[in-house]
Length: 353
Image (tube, rainbow, N blue to C red; front, side, top):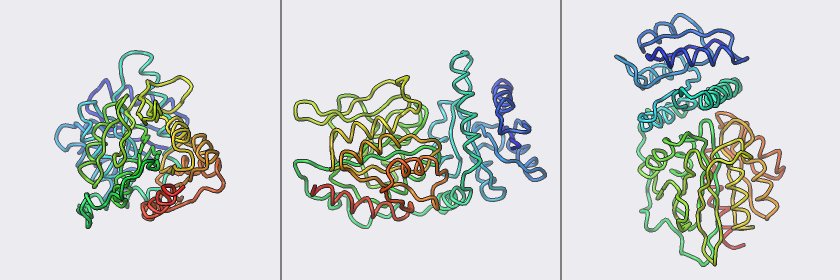
């Protein structure tokens, strides 16, 4: 795989190039410092992947990304400074494959960053560019959210024991989550989401989902009551769990645990929800590389809950939904466009369980 690095910082450019050259999937690396140079290289050479800084001089990274998705579709990995979290999330919605923070100077954090970049590059090889381009096209079309029914009438009547819904996503997840919650009216259900993202970006993810859908979406905080009708997003760099204490259902946010490879961990979220809700739980695994969520799906199935996995036809990367489907052979495989309706049916069934 040939990779084009687009980065104006000489230090960051060096770190990215070094990391890529040490990645087995990469055969050659070129680096440029401006968006204009990037487009010239893309017009005359073939690349398998682009890493893109958003804060470029002149033509900024968002404009470069729009040009790439419209003219030379190729996987784009955004490598963004923490202060660019809103722009980075917009880039994911516009078709970027993944967002990473900038390389740090501390040897331990630099080693973790290099490992994560290598994982993303390796995982990009089997991705569906068709799905990425489709979501990019839908984003730039600017279709307004469809809210035919006012929010107040969308939530079904409250019951003593609302069901639970937990969702896992990684690469390609933010636009998939937006499509999911845009199509699913707010429910009388407790909802938790584990999206693999660095710490600064999950707060912006919650804000953008709240403003772009009919749901109340919040970044989770320890000790908060797990209120139904709210989408609780696991904070980046931490794990979200549901805990029953003295008849109350609470959120617990724990720092990254060495036993868990992924953070936030879908396995930990799903397992805690299985204990909290039993058969009144629906687990959903969307696009993403790796196998996070597979063990959690086993726990949900063992508790009598329901598992739905995004189909191979719509997932940008099928690793996570495939692993979950292997872990629970009876899991449903559903295209993303049909997932909201299927979740609504399964939540209604779970409410009666």
